[in-house]
Image (tube, rainbow over all chains, first blue to last red; front, side, top):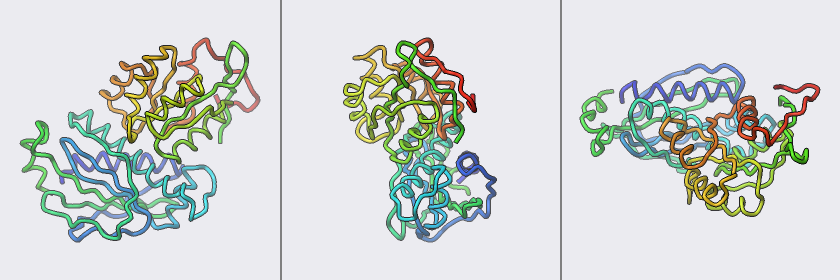
Length: 169
Length: 146
């Protein structure tokens, strides 16, 4: 994956988390994930189709999810509350929507699908053209994991011709 | 949360009534909380575009806050259908997907304004006042945030 694809997601996550939690965020670490995705806690997945296709997963351990949801809601929420799961989906929706908006203005065309809770413990293994990048955001509420697996779609006009670049990490 | 000078209907001094449309319960609750700080009243809620049309007919709100990406029927299509039947409808799109094409499409199909998520209450407040124009007045209130 090229950085031009990833940077808008990092910028959007940083901005959305900082606004929602009213505090600073920092990128903890970045890593390429070659093994199958393993869920860490409460996870929400958004599918993207179009010139670039793939999926983005936001994953938070249950206590962090509760603190983040409470921060976004502006009130304390109990750990078991459905609203916590909803908040993780809405966090994913906002970050991905903002990132896609930036990429769209660069000429890429997408369709963003509504976020769904990712309940499987394990996801599909990455492949050469859909390798996953994991970015951890450190916040005062805990660590937010963003797992991105995207690739250029060779079948669309804009994606065509960029396949080689997409396969380079 | 910051309190704003209450926005009321000019004709009868009643609170502005809102229909909130978003497939996320969390987002709807958040918007409802923000509306409260504007002195507004929640007239109804919907989780998709189809329900939004039904709820509009039922509640006849002063303002619709409409998400774009939703199951069954997306927000832009729902806005168009509402405006076709009720040209006076005031619909503000509230979405995280805020690229130019989307905004233009929404405005061309009847939406009055666009606010990008995450919603900043002070931005939404100004948009609501702008969209309502002379139909509403913002009374000055002690501790008002805008």
